[in-house]
Length: 384
Ligand code: BGC
Image (cartoon, rainbow, N blue to C red; front, top):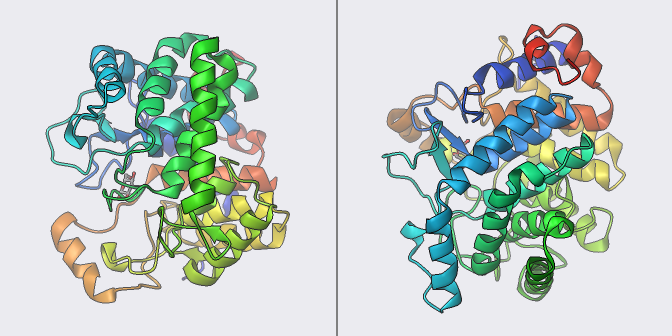
């Protein structure tokens, strides 16, 4: 990994500027403005973590606008969601292609491009991020109540189903990080719900915890999917920032040890062993998730090391890629993906968000560092 020429503060300011400048008038955060396969779409997963970082950085209005966008996507589909819930409750769960998609156009449409769409994690993550945001800024979830209730009903009815994972792969499995995103989201909003929904949510969260304990562990650590013996970089998020499993528990520590041993190479974190996407490089956003998890477990030095690697992944212009190509698991596959989709997605807004999030959590950045020289903040400032 070459040493970056962009210093930490400049990168942080560039990151928040990019996120604010790219947010669409509808409130959506594009995954990557330039990458062929992502252009024109916003994901609930990426967007929820981007909003969480914007919120932590003091840009509450931007985060709220994203949650407004999520809410309108959901309320526009209220009838369809109610149909999914009633069919599921009647023992006729709709086929995967009839479930909600993972990504939407900025205008909130389903889009016309084929995608690996049935993914449940983002629906939990938006609930979690919106609740954290409301708590952080002393706001209420009330303005999103209808959308929150629709999401809760959808997840309570569907959480046990196999679906695509964070990487839009392996649709036949139930993924532990997906379960944790759902569990963390349901748990976060429970106190806000009416008694009936809260009871159903409590039962679902208990069910998620039980299924992870029974089938989602291997060798004392979290597993990639129920019944798997492998790990996945997304499991770091289960420990932090989601906090669904305490990072400093025996299970958290064993998961951290295994992620370190299997996926971290010099601070750059691979998605999973056997990854071939663009040759299977290291993802800055995963270094940041692992850094957040180590920090939550009390290992600041490990978090700093991972953060340094993520910073160094920036281009000289300060853009962060989806993945860095300096250590590849499957070098022979890199060209295949370049021929198919062009060079690696750069900038990827989610990468920028996670560097901000970890920098803030480490205390190496403060919201003031991000406001002083960031012109784009002015129109968004909540205090104005
Ligand atoms: C990743 C997803 C991500 C999407 C948009 C895909 O390649 O696998 O996790 O949501 O890109 O960034």
